Length: 231
Image 1: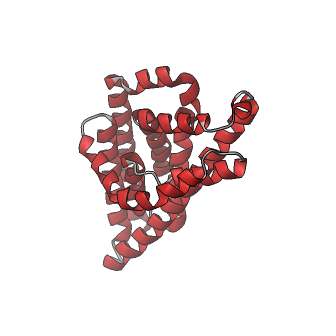
Image 2 (image 1 turned 90 degrees about the horizontal axis):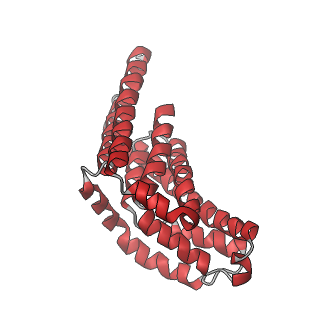
Image 3 (image 1 turned 120 degrees about the horizontal axis):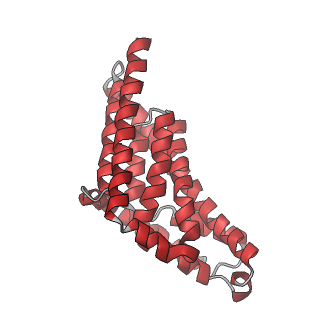
């Protein structure tokens, strides 16, 4: 499980660099929607950005919890005796797929974000009604809506959450994933140019993807050995 959470953290950290163009622009729009007096006071601005991202993490955690609960019920009902092995294999394959995606070798993985477009069309108008944001509570609510934005990276994390075996573990995976995205999104307004140059560096993307793949395979070997020893 520790390897899975480390994978979640790295997925959020490196993946958010990959998606900084889209998410960074959203973060900038949210910032400029604030009254001038709040934007001019750095501690207040940081507080609002914190509430935006707290709302986003709450939505991620909720989605991951639901995915973990659904996945565990589905797979264990299909195969009660080998459910753990199936979950372990599927989780490893998904993390490998995301590693290939981050490295730029499997760009079609991003197509899965189309799944959430119909739902987003219903939710997005609620977010527009909250603009301009005038209070921390509004920022929190907007962040919760932002968390449902169709994103291939987030949906990939959700697919991994499906294989975590429990609702709690699925929610934990998405929560840690969300924590990994914080440095890029919180810093996008201040270091956007530097972050973009890092994200667009093919070598950095390749190293990040390969490290994630190695971590997934290592976790598979360790967890499989533990499972065989217990049974």
